[in-house]
Length: 473
Ligand code: IMP
Ligand code: MG
Image 1: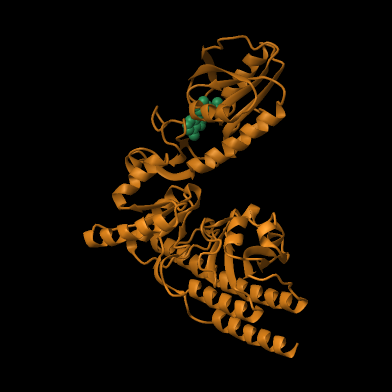
Image 2: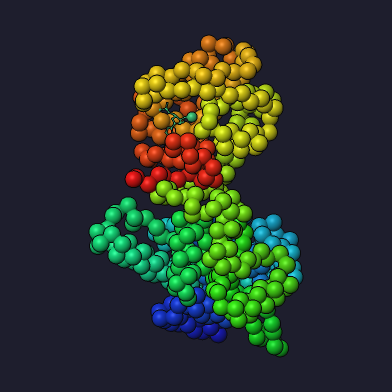
């Protein structure tokens, strides 16, 4: 008992000393993990940070894990010990067979038997997780749980300090850009992206990713590539991980000798970690990459005029899937007719219908507006087939004043469908004139003119795979 108490006391001392050091975040967390593992006689420990959207956990520091569980990069937060996110300590006494473990085969490979996780909490919200691992079967005593809770509290302070540092950095750079005047709307971010970039090109790459609303993590993981005895003699830490694309990115410059060395490392990494997706790219390759992942051919040429991206392609696709699922469920056992109002609905309708699982037909209408602001609407293309007695969903790209959809609904209702509902990707309530009931809404948007994903400005921009706000001239 006394020896155990002594070990925990030393552990607390070391954790506190590490937390109060002026090391980088990564190293601070590594040191904390080491102290925790030693104090609790564990084989490994890691500190994970939960991203603000609360969908994945990234390792910010670890000890004794080598490659343990890290193979796939960040963890899906929903699949990962949910009780911890709710604020409780979770204990897994037999990892290889426990359903809650995300990669049980790796637990088996690494001989991990025991896992315990404590929430890292700040102001009653879980901001991360502290995990400990053991290769032997064991329990966690109340004393050990107390220790783990204390270590998690200190880790919370460390993570918060890092968030604050990053926040300050952002505020300052914003202030510098806007000549000292700070806009309160910008004071919202609390994400924990390590911002100590090694190169200016990395910072630029991160800005580009931010512009495209592509989530990124900077150097989230190191891959041991070569060993000498029990130690690691060569490591490779790719610059970025893009969770939505499940891809690591290593940026490269134009210096040929560096490219060759990096190529060799990338090749080694691919050999040893075949399920890791990594790309070695130059600035020029990047626009090609965006193209490949659907962020638009020609990259920047096409986004000329777009001041800000409102919804990325991935965000749109996620939302469309949800809407399609909801429609499929609501109309289960029925057949439906989707009616699209040309031409803006093009992309949305096409994606939506492919994700609906019940039988459906598609038809189109086209209207033209007279007198500017949609005061007079005239049908220029009517339906091909009768909709009498059928379940109809009117699909729209955007409901603005509501005049168009209102007119179309009146027209469709006169053909006596069995039911009639409205599904719109975007809803801009600020300018609503007609009172229409919207049954399925993708996103409610602010009072800004938007383009992309089918929506146009003077006929152009429909081919952008994302939705952006047009820059005022
Ligand atoms: P409403 O009759 O005012 O609701 O207008 C809806 C129609 O105007 C939509 O179907 C679009 O074709 C067009 N529209 C409204 N707002 C925008 C926008 O921000 N970008 C592109 N088209 C828009
Ligand atoms: Mg339209």
